[in-house]
Amino acid sequence: MKTDKLIVTNVAALTRKYGKQHKSILNDLKKLQTYDRQRGLTTQLVFLDHAKDMAQYKAKPVTDPENAKQNKDAIDAVYRFFSPTTSCWRERRISSHFNR
Image 1 (cartoon, rainbow, N blue to C red):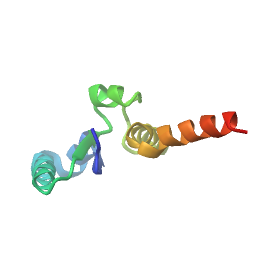
Image 2: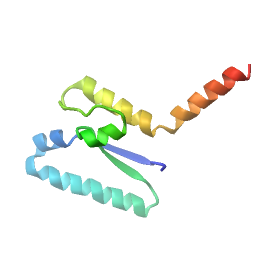
Image 3: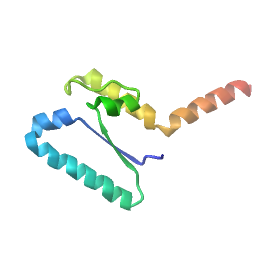
Image 4: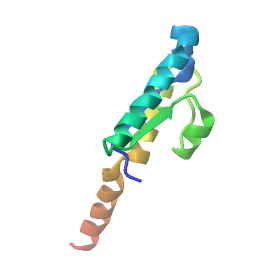
């Protein structure tokens, strides 16, 4: 499935910063997803700290929202998973190697 937009967040960080209000933010993000769907866009909501979500992207979840390396590694994994150019680049590289 083609994804047009990624929204990446960390529920633990939202909870820490906004307390119970974080639920309102998550609801607004889901409304944005619905609005995008009505406009023909596919929007994926990614929770960097949810182990189950991150497993599908072959990444470790972020356990410390302030840990820059964990966040970068998670974002890089999500990028690789959704990047349409990654697989195309590999195919071109292999193809150009054999066409010399």
